[in-house]
Length: 90
Image (cartoon, rainbow, N blue to C red):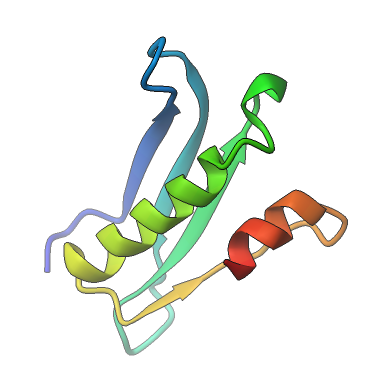
């Protein structure tokens, strides 16, 4: 395994190359397995509720397991963030 503790990516709309947010994986040091915390933030209002977050989480999850060989992902989210909860449950 590499010594990198985290991976951060911009969320970009392909059509106009605008950055609408970020997502990241942070290595959890307090476990006996390879585990990452997943984080996502879409700051631009026009980028919300259009499936970009769902796609980003799907790609980030795939990257974590396939490329980083993670055995587990963790996620914390704000309870009243209905759009976020819907995205994470997918």
